Each structure stands twice: as C-alpha cells, then as structure tokens.
Image (cartoon, rainbow, N blue to C red):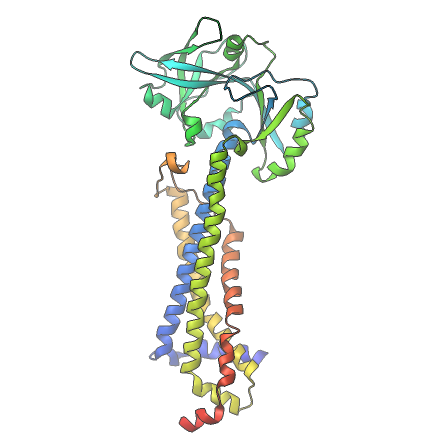
Amino acid sequence: MKFPIYFSKKIAFSKDNKNNLSKVIVFIGRLSVALGIIVSLITVSTGLGSKKAIESRLANFSGHITIKSTRSNSSYNTSVLNKEGLKINEIKSLEEVAGVQSYATVSGILRTEDNFDGVILKGVSKDFDAERFQDFMISGEIPKFTEIGYNNQVILSQKIANDLHLKTKDSIVAIFSKEDQKPIYRKFVVSGIYKTDIKMIDDLFIIGDINHVRKIQDISKDDVGGIDVFLKKSETIDSAFPKIERLIGFKNFAEKATDKYPQIVDWIGLFDTNIALIITILLVVVVINIIMVLLILIIERTNSIGVLKTLGANNQQIRAIFINYTLLIMVPGLIIGNVIGVGLLLIQKFFGIIKLNPENYYVSTVPVDLNPIYILAISLGILLVSAVALILPSYLISKISPVKVIKYD
C-alpha cells in the first residue's frame, strides 16, 4: 500500500501540472471544497450560536427550571408556592445546580401623563442573582433587594422605557387592581434599564422588590410565588429536571425555561432542520465537484494508467493512487476554507458586525459558537464522505486497456 501513496504524492505535487488542464481542475476542486467548508462553518456556528444564545437568555432571566404552585393558572398573578414537601436546601446541593432565587409576580399598569403600558412586576428577594442579570443591563444599576421594608427602585426593559419616554432616575406610577377592591397605586423610581432581546420578556416585565408584590397580593412576608433554579451548565437541564421534580412536593410543579414560550421552542427547532438541510446540500455539491475532478484527472492521465498497468500495477493500486491524489488536492482547500471561515466568524464574534431584528430573531446580533469539535468534524466529514464517494467512479480505471492506450499513443 506504500506504492499508491508514494505515487499519488508525486503526481499531486508535480511541477508538470503547471501548464496543462490539471491546473484548472485542481483549482476548481480546491475552490469547491473551500467554499463548502466556509459555508458549513458559518451555518453550523451561527445556527448553534443563535440556538444557545436564545436558550441562555431565557434561562438567565427566569432560571433554567422554574418551580411554581399547581394552583398557578394562565394569570400573571402568581399563587403562593406550597412548602409541603419542598426541599430547597436539597435542590441547592444538587451537583448541577448553581443557585436559586425566589420571586412573585403581579400584573399592573405603568402610567405617565402621556401614555401607559401593561406590565408584570416580577418581585425578587435578597437571593436575587444580580451578577447574572448584569449581562442584560444597558444603563443604570441594579438595586439591592434586602427584603427590609419596601425598595421603590425598579428595573424597566428598554422597550417599556422607550414607550413611556423614561430614563434612569425618573419616577413612574404603577396601578395594580384586585377583584372587588379599589386600585392600588405605587410610585417607583427607575434604577436601571435592561434588554434581553426576547420580545415576550421585554414587552412585559419590570423587576422590583418582592415585598411590594406580597403587599399587593396580601400574602405573608415569608411566602413566594415561585423559585428560579439556575444550573451550572445548560446541557444538564434534562438530567437535572427529574431530580428537581422529586424535591418540590406534590402541590408544586417544575417547568423548563424553554417550555414557558412554546413559540420560541418551535422556532429554535428550525435551526436543527436548517443546519442539516444546508450541510446535506453542500456535501452533495462538494462531492459532485470532487467526482468531476477525479474523472477528468483519470481521462487526462489515461496514458499514465496504461503505463502503470503495463509495469504490473493492478486496478486496485491505480484506483488508490487516484483517490489519494484527489484527496490530497482537497487538503489546501480545507485549510483555506477553515482559515477564511474561522476568520469571518471571529470577526463577527468580537465585533458583532452583522445585526438582526430582535423582534424576529430574538437576538440583536448574529451569535457565534466556535466549537473546535464542530470545526474538526466538518473537515473530516467532508474528507470521509468524499473518499467513500470516489470509490465507485474510480472503477472507470478498470475499463482502460493498456494495449489500446499504448497503441493510440
């Protein structure tokens, strides 16, 4: 087997290819491989990057897993979480869990002299993960929620702030209504403005003190409406979920972050389909071009094949020579494609040049997930598929008769 490898290297790097048809064929082969690698890398990295970015934003805002009372309905006013069978300390001690935070929500209206907006006040307590939420902040600061008295500072989304023409340090009146009771008024101060790019969140939620929600809902100072559970790694959500379910009691239920917004889940699912479809099409195009390159190289070097057969080389050895030759032609294309593809992705990752409409895509810039495993898998995958695809057309070599070739030569 050393002879086919040695001979294929000799003809692949021979200077005799400079002024004949081989030069053009080699260029076409390498160009198709390079383009295939570039488009594949961009498709996989941005597709998976978008998927992870959206899931991460959902999880960082409301926890990877949320625990709520079974009495909770479609209303945004949370029911009190039942403490019977709820083992918070055991949930915190799970290997997958990074932390938990309690909350309660109530719906209301923010009103200015000129406009109003329906909102949900998400009241958070002293265990609020301010460091995690900091990634969403675009101006102002996160208040300290100590659960001592009533903190009148709130964080608005950029969407709500723009609708009501508010900025940090502005005052705003909130109105909360309860069945068969007079409206409840609260005056808040805008401490900060956040942006998640998730329309269903940015359109509704403001962050404030849980004690305000407790007062409005007439619930005890120790009661909460739910618990957000944050995991160390998003990938462990499926394994952590059943463990957490066993520790929440029978009168509460657990919900994954993505399950709260099924329309987003359906949209994220399209990424996998699109990535698979695009990669398949690219593989087909690359393989067709490489097969074309092999066939032309075989036709061009018919005389060489005849001489090799005359000297005693069998069909299997000659097929191996041309398959190796074609794969060696692909290697520079793989290198160039990876360099250009990774370079473009790095530029997007660090500078965010390409922007998106968050109302349609849930992210404002194209996210990039540069995983070395994907980069290596794409290159090796194209090489492997091409090598297998070249086996059948290489059998054309067995049809070449050395007697006829030498006779016509």
